[in-house]
Image (tube, rainbow, N blue to C red; front, side, top):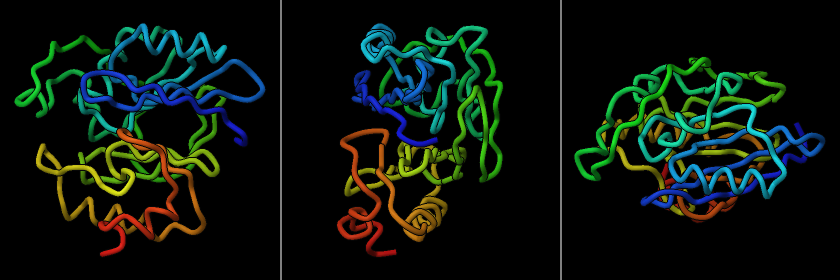
Length: 208
């Protein structure tokens, strides 16, 4: 799906990047990682003249999911990797560091379990499982855009000390580094980048 319109919306105490990805031809939009601040997300949808039709989660940590229960309705499916689906109804390990009030969530309707093309709610996208930060972390690819969650940041990578796996993360990063071509990277925190820049400048990718 070409020429998707992307709006970055920082939310919550950890300044998590929520993304609104809107079709250029309709008002239909995907919301990726609605981590908090429902009114901020709703205002961004309004200003983008967009209607949320699908919620995609890069992983299940609380700062990426807290607004799911308020944003969704019966017509908005939620997608997450099957290994992180339990985090929608359980407190994650971040709660030991940053207390938060758990919100009620319904189980996700879409549980990704393998790499490949998916077509959901009129959107076509590619899912790359990237375990390491969590066992169910994924990247979502829309043509030349990649939403990396907390797997790959600008000049950095995700942490693994809260239920993650360092060896798995390094394997995931190596797979991303070796992808052909280039992608604009939209991470879960900090500023966007490009995969070509991360290959050159990110010390974690350079050393793989």
